[in-house]
Image 1 (cartoon, rainbow, N blue to C red):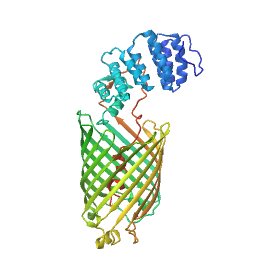
Image 2 (tube, rainbow, N blue to C red):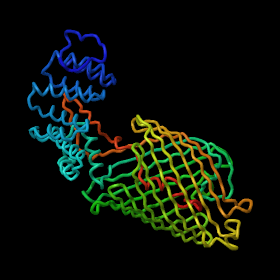
Image 3 (cartoon, rainbow, N blue to C red):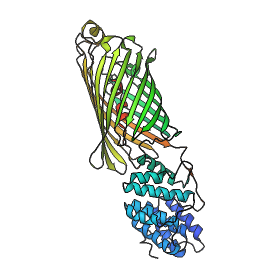
Image 4 (tube, rainbow, N blue to C red):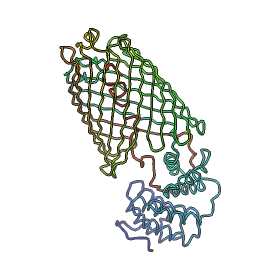
Length: 512
């Protein structure tokens, strides 16, 4: 029949197996990921029922899932020979050309397609045009084609994630309406006091540790250019060693805001409220109220600033604070992504000894190891200066009448296995060291070193309840686009990198 070379051996189908029976058997093989077995059976079925479009599409699907684009194309062209200018087959062929990296051939396939009636097939045709223009670097035309598939459109189930992915790639102001990330870890710390918000001035307690973090965002698409945003965050850490348990913490933050597009940039204005609880009595250690502004450019660069008030259990540390930062992605070698950024910050505390001016810098490189696995290397440097910490008041606060200055460095290395249903497992090791001029009295030594190792589980999701509704006819064969939400990678934004670490968020000491 000219449908390809058999790659697996299977028993011939029973003579009573009609076309519908063959379709059910092929679907069972495909769902079981036995793609070559499906190809072998479907080749024979197409020879028996040469004018059955459903079987031809299933054979093309099996070839695509098996990575054989050439024979998927041959299958579709053979079906077009007897079916004429069938719109559904032409659209499948255009998608195969796009998966082969040939937008010109895809354009030719789309050019001869008679415009389908309004419905999921029309939506697919517009999505393919948008995809083709995107690969051809004609982004304005791609955005125009994608605009033809609005939120009230009807799409096939597999076309909906493609709609979302193209929206992300073509619209710099795009936000997934609902996103969430959960991370949990267990491991070991050689120094449970390291980086504690209480800035204890002592160190050295070894302990097992457990931590968890939840970050989520709600951004309902209520307007075309202005979107309300609600960010929620909770980060907890606990230690097993009894003498280290008081350093366990829970940090919670809520930020309502508005994000709007201004030309090619997006601007977010928000108000952040934070609370920090410790495993002590009383438990509330600090709370903050801040106004924040973020400006993001299409290529991923980000400038941000914040101003507010932070009140501590120790009134001497309560302060007015500000910070200003900038960062973004940098060009790197193939298979390696790199982001870097820096912040400058200051605080005017109730007690002048706790006034601080600091600079933080961070960089992260992600190296693709193949098959979805990755290696992540992160480095951070934090410098803090307490300009009014000398003299008698400084001696009371930090144990020295010299001016306190700290230099903190961290490096971490993590290995992550491929994602499964949004979940990834990783192993991370971190080394940290802080040198401080306040290090010359027992109980007031702010130097520390720490080794930390953790096993991490990270799960993320994104959802769009307002996306186009799906339609699945009884004889529908799903098209494997080869383009999905996870295909663009899992590179983090610079704002997330700079805020993931308590020392980077609010300085290396005096709390977060």
